[in-house]
Amino acid sequence: MLGFSKSFLAGQRHQFNGPTVLIVSSYFLYSFVLYSKIGFLNRDLIANQVTGDTVQQVWFLAWPTHALRAGLNPLWSSSLDVPFGINLLSNTSMPLLGILCAPVTWLFGAIATYGLLLQLALGASATSAYFVARKLTMSQLSAFVVGLLYGFSSFFLAQGHAHLFLTFAPIPPIVFWLLWRIVIQDGPVRKLAVSLGFLLVADFLISAERVVMMLFVAFIALVVAALFASSDQRRVAIVGLRQAFLPLVATAGILGVGPVLISLFGPWSVRGNPHHWTTLHHGDLMEFVQPNIWFRPIGNWHSTLHDQLLGASLERGFYVGIPLLLGVVYGAWRYRSLVVTRIATVLFLVTGTLSLGSSFWINGHNTKIPTPFAWVAHVPLLSAVVPPRYMLFVILIVAFGAGALLDATVRNWGRLTGTQRNVRRVGAGLFVLLQLWCFVPASRFAAHPVQISPWYHSDEFRTVVKPGSNVLFFPYPNPFFNHAMLIQADTEMRFDITGGQAIIGDGHGHNQGITMIEPWQVSTVFLRATWGVTADTSVSDLPGMSHLMPPHSEATVAAFHDYVRRYQITTIIATPFGMEYPQAVRYLIDAFGEPQVRDAGQVRFWKIAPQP
Image 1 (cartoon, rainbow, N blue to C red):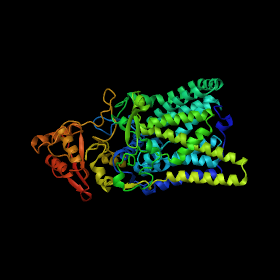
Image 2 (tube, rainbow, N blue to C red):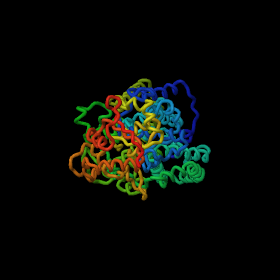
Image 3 (tube, rainbow, N blue to C red):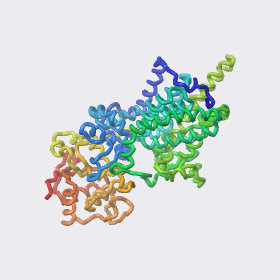
Image 4 (cartoon, helix red, strand yellow):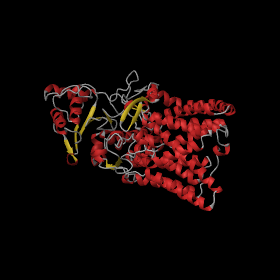
């Protein structure tokens, strides 16, 4: 069927024998070694950096844990962006991981949970690919290579610096394996459909973006299969898909209709592309063969950090390597008569070009030749996908293609003489080692101190900041200075904050982000001091910068008092982050007097009396 016998694609049972245990253990050991700098269940160190997406994801893991304990909805929250709130499903919030790991968060904190999940993500993804390869009757060696190429590929090593919602990807290999079994009617189709629906909903609650891509790629795969398959094969596939349709829709509908409706129409939801810069992300054809900064030391870090091909963006996960690409080309040609090879080849080309963005780039030059993404970018839902993230499917195809080629090569050795067999073994071994060397990262993932003062875990803090109270922080929480969100997560969501980092919809479903609230004087002072733009310069395209710094006057003091009264702020906390910290402190002293100082100046706080 489609070039393979049913036995090749069948759901064979494989025991947890010694080699399997060793292989799976090696995946997780390697993953833990890569993240060893952050330690094990350590709440004092965090991967990558103490700001931006890293902090945001810690917050996303902390909220469902708090919601379960407090009897709140884990899919939206009013603890951020006071007096409004956020819709977690319009963000990369991973609520399923937060719920499943709630016991870990209760015991060790959300920072430790985030670190643990990063350590587990690569190993879990590799293990999933390994077991699917074994289900496809690949040898343990070939399946081991499949898992290694998938779970520790350039995509995972680049995104693994911060984006847990993308690297925790054990579900995609299983989804496509189940789809194949449905198409060839291998096994109880209705049960396979129920399993497929369950996994799609589960992955939606980890990464909605990935599910959108999976459905799109699966649709393309079915269309391509229909073009290449014989009439008999198409007839079998149509029957299988018909049998699967109702169980799949029923399962996905019953389990997923609530989350999908909340995502699209719930409070503060966003519909369509949340970011205007999505289409600006692009790849370069040279990146498929040229390792970048993540994979080995190349020259000077500072000279390569912003290089178009070698730079340090987390979206630079294009590298496949010349050895593997040569193997893929050889395998595609050698087994071109198989329908499944033709499908995989077309999918590789389509997903590869989609990952490049709206046009082809070659060695840093835009050819202006449009890719399929130029049209896909205008399709609802698909327009919100960041183009380089299609590389997940390129890597998935390459990994399984390489495993199948290796498996076929090893099986053909049985017809060779002893000398020929040994020569082939040495050649294949050198080829595999050369490719694996290409995927060796330049270093282990970085770790940084969380910089959370011990005061936040003191009795005084618990006395000053009451549960559920509103706190105003400097720096004003925003995507680049969101340390307050880390403090909030580490203190078990004890308080709510104005500002933050999140995708937040307006009444029309458009992303307005964290909005600046009136009176404008407070937001202006805090954001200008955060960015170090306190001069009399208007920067209208940056939030909070359209106004000039207010004067030190009674009117400004009145505006600060009006702000805390409107939003029921009970505590103001200033930490020495941001460019112009002293400037912000002076305005706060004008309005509320001298602060209490703790931890050698790392914390300054004002307890606000109830405002009339």
